[in-house]
Image (cartoon, rainbow, N blue to C red; front, side, top):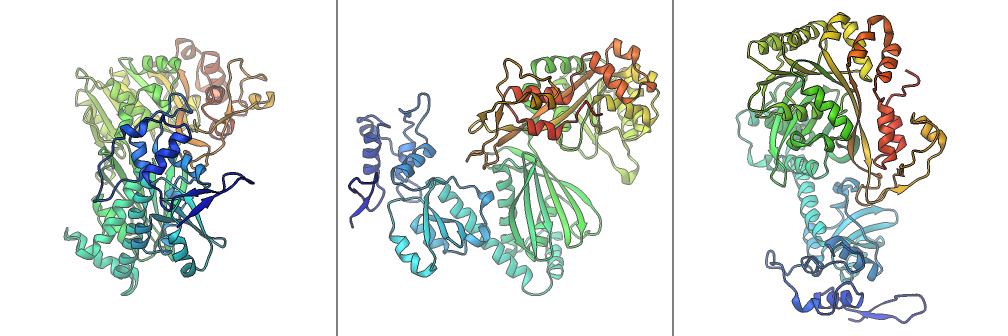
Length: 600
C-alpha cells in the first residue's frame, strides 16, 4: 500500500512506509541532522520483551545519542517522539492520567484490540474520539474502527512506553471496578454486601472475589506516589464515590468509583491501616506502611470520618525522604539557615514553629530533629498522632482514651533523661506550663502553634496564661512559615512588574536591581498549571536580649510586631517577595498565602 504526506503547501507528496520501522526512522534522523550518518552502524539493540521487538523509538532512545540541535541535551524518548510527531504532521500528546476519564474511555474499544493496534483512547466528545498511537504511519485500524464507532477518529502521537503502561493500568482498573461492582453491588443494598465483606476481612482472609478490590487499592496507592500526591481523598456520594488527590496543595479529581464499590475499597484500606472495619459511626485513625514503585518505603496516615453517604477516608502520604532534606532544600536562605541552626543548637529553651495546617511545620521539625539526633543526645517526642516513625528518636503518641495528654506525656518524658523534647502542639495552658518547666530545667523544647505569624505566637502564649517573664526567660525564637507553589522551570517566562505590584509585596516601590520575576504559563511537565512543586517561605523571629528587654503583654500584637521588625525580623510577605525576585514563585502565590504586615 502506498501512502503519501504533504510536507508544505504546494510541494509534491512524499511516500511514507505503511508501518513505522527502525530503518526508515534512522534514515530520517540522519536526514534531519539529529544523528551523524555513521550512528546507525553502531546501533545497540535493547532486549526484547515478551517476545516482541522493541519499538523503533525505544531503540533509538536507548542509544543515548546527543541532540545535535541543542548542546548538552540528549535524544530522549520524549524528544524523539515530539520530533517524529512534527515529522509526520501529527499532534504530540504527553498522557496525563489526571485529565482522563478512564472509566468511559476504556469502554470505547476492547483491551485486546487496543493492545494489538497499539492505540489508547484519550478523549471522547461530540467531535469524536481521540486515540494516542504508537505507530503514526499505521492507519489500517482507523478504517476498521470508523464504521463501528460511527464518530470521527483523531490521532495523536504519544510515547510508546506510556501507551503500553497505561493500556495495562487503565483497562485493569476499569475491569476491577466493574467486576467488584457486580460482586458487591448487584445482590442488594451496598451496606448489606459491605457487611459481608467486613466479616471476611475480620477473619483475616480476603476471598477470591475480593481480588478486584485489592487491585483497585494497589493501583490507587501507586498512582498517588507517581503523581507526587500528598493526600488521597475518598469521598462517598449518593450515586458515586469520588477519588481526589492533593498535589502541590491543590485538589485534583482522579476517578469516580461506583457507589457499591466505594465501601469495599474503604474496608480494604481500613484493613491495611489496622482499623476496626465494623466501626463506622465514629472517626478512626491508623497508618499504612508500604512501598512506592521505585522501592522506597512510604507511610500513610489513614483518617476515617462518617458522612451522610458512608465513610470518608483521607490518606496523608509521608515520604521518609523529607527527614534527610537539608534546610536549603526546604526553602531556607543561607542567612535563615544560619539563624535557625543557631536557635535549635541552644542547650535549653523553647523554639516554636507556627503556621496553619499544611504549611510544612512537621517537615521542618522532623528535619531539625534529624540534625539534632546524634549519638550523644536523647531526643524524645510526644505527638498526636506520630506523623513519621523514625529510628533516630523516641516517639510517643497521645492517647486521650487513657488520659495520656501532651502535658502528661511531657511529664513522663522528663523522667526519661531527655536532652531534647518535641511536643506536637501546645494547645492549652497545662501543656504550655510543662513546656516552660522543661525549658527551665535545662531541656531544649521544640513545638508548634497555630498562629498567623511569629509575633502572634508570643501573644498566644500570654493569652493561654503563661506569664511574660517566663516567656522572656525560656523562649529562644519563633519560626512562622508557609508553603508556596514554585514556578515550573520548563515553561515560566520573565515578566515586568510595576511599582504598585512590588509595593503590594511590601518591598518598596521599585524592583530590586537583581530581580528576575517570572510568571506561570503551563506546559506538559506541570499539567498546564504553571507550577511544579512547593517551597517554604519563612519568618524568623529570634528572641534577642533587645527584644526581651522591650516586650511585654501591654505591648499588644501590633507593638510586638513592630519591636520584632526593629530587631531584624523580616515578615513572611517580604521573604516571599525575595522568592518572587529570584523567579521561584509568582506574586499571586505570595499574596494569597502570606499575611499583609501593613494591615495586621
